[in-house]
Image 1: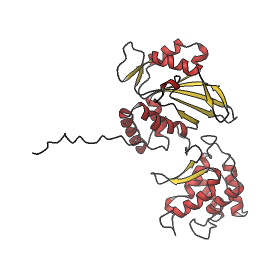
Image 2: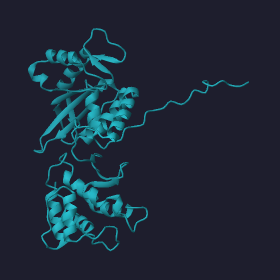
Image 3: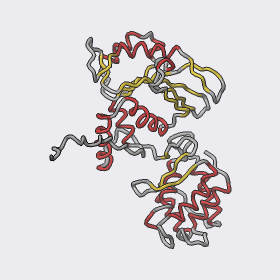
Image 4: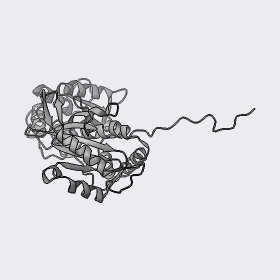
Length: 328
């Protein structure tokens, strides 16, 4: 990722503390070395002019690995978090708001916005996609206490939400956060236009090639039993929808042409049983089998919990006025 020289120089002045307003601490050469060491980098100040040296370092840091092609590198996110540490606030009321305004005046020209999350840390949001930049985190690592609490809240929400809420409130923000673009939801108002898919989206590879994905979503458990219960879906239904999805073209307005879906996601808010996976795999030929991807409740929870997305509130119904005895 490349940012304009003007942007890098503005951020460099903030890191060096060369600002007349006094919203950022002044850092000498040795303190700059310590600053970048705290950001898990190995840059050592060479005695040259501080702000030019820092701008050059920032340009190199932007080329470090990132979570997506449209996101700054993980190292750059750590630099921003250190720069905007709420404990460093002084000469500001409310704390860090003027520093935040100064940072946003620089990075908005690059398509990003800085904000403070519930964790009191500074995060970056992509203004184009709405995705929140975050350091890459494995969904299979041990969870922190806060992440375990977030997981429990998400499970509670998944137990009570509808299929449309699963799509709109959970899956669409999650896929945007994962780097997918042009995410469109068919919804359930006009099933004739779904053609076997609830969502379609695309992923732009670093080579600028594009992969298209169709997604079929079921709220509950997906099984291969002969009798389908109200909270479950039979894989035979999914089989027909997947065939429709892979065989029907979608229109990409950005390219002004119709394209076929490269891969089909089968997403369930509950468990996808092994029997269901095997059944649909046996029904499809070898070429189509390689196009099928599964995502069940555990996958959704693992990806959502390690992301910076917030768990939506569980809808609470209004109390029934006839629940209490009415005095006469």
